[in-house]
Image (cartoon, rainbow, N blue to C red):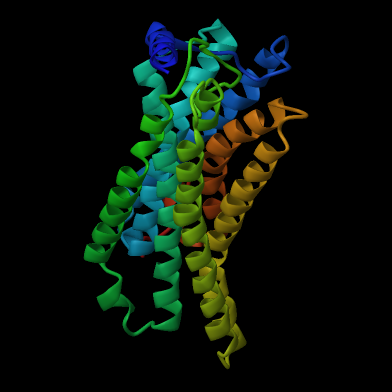
Length: 319
């Protein structure tokens, strides 16, 4: 028993870095994916930065709904930047080596930012619920103090609950090659020589508690919103109420559908292993790239703000 333990500890101590092999099964031509991934990353950075500048520049957008959108933009930039520079370095320069601190920091950051995105969607759903179902109480309930408290509570929840993930992922042996483009919890634990039951249980519990709990509350909020809207006597009021939350609902459905699809592909990933890895990468970069586009297409106030910031609408009056 002591001999086995000492061998395990010795093997673990010999690993000073991991090697990210890229997309499993397609190493020969995976560099061709660098162009679309680079375009998605550039779009995510540019579009979310434009949203932040527009919200800051336009006084009419200094409202809780747009403040939550600005926080979502910061989270999206952070999430994409956590993984994309390293992925592009692997695809362009074959820079596959990553140090242990960088790897475990990436595991923590990915999980924390994904949980934060889910939490911000919940805050946005609550904002729309109060605005539509209790419009007279909205200014006193959802104000700047509410935005700050809700954001800090989400940061505290996600920051603390994801700390054990990189700690529990440290059960690896002398192998250090990971068939992935990034340091994921599943990728690192695939190198384990010890029992990882606790790691798997905690990862599953966190997924259900944070993402699953947020999803239930989000869709419950929108069910109450739709029920309240359908009771309105005016067709115009119904249409206006639904249009104010349609962009939120599109993003939320896309986000949680992607989470479910990613979970299913991980379960079926043994036959075609590169599919869950590719989906994992896309799930971290596609929402940051497309979230601003949905808002730009669906929200008139934001479109007008974009035009003024970009100098395309000098004649558009400020509200």
